[in-house]
Image (cartoon, rainbow, N blue to C red; front, side):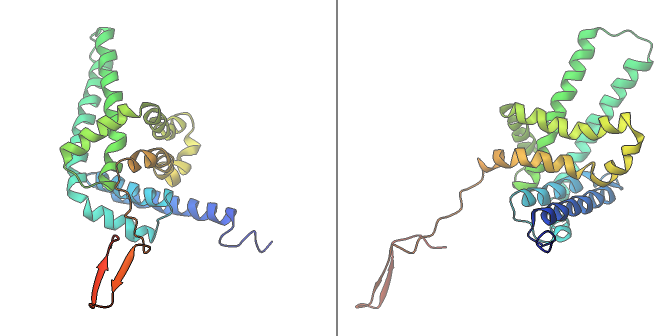
Length: 229
């Protein structure tokens, strides 16, 4: 029974992870309240979650606000751009549904398709911002390239993010669960997929060997044939 509640036991690791995701979800909600800071909150969330996935996590709250502050400017600008796109699509939806005009089906399908593509690209934007230093333009461009180069994973990630909305639509009782895990849990699932994608573009850790080192004692000079940090 003692091993069951040991800190290194599988059940305790799962409970710790659940607690981390709960805290992270609440942090994101709080930091999204001003609306304009939502992008920085999403970026900070992905910074923490990627470290969780790779077993590199430290202090959750400290890491969250470290990334929040570091990427604040770029994240806010990208988020404002996203809000503009969202506003356009909300306007289009209102026009399609309440204007009384019958629009051609190809036009409606094209608008929906463009919206889906933008959503697929947006999935990668904040994780990229959290992990790589780049310009806003290159971050968005790289997000688009990754979205289509890894289409099966992108679609699965989109499903993760859409699931809370689907569940909430059919069951109002699920709102408490969405409040607790509706943002961080889908992001955690998505991170399992994009972590391996990102590793392809991350520099390999430098391998330092102590097997190829010589010391010239006679002349009092050191010679190193290996790599040094």
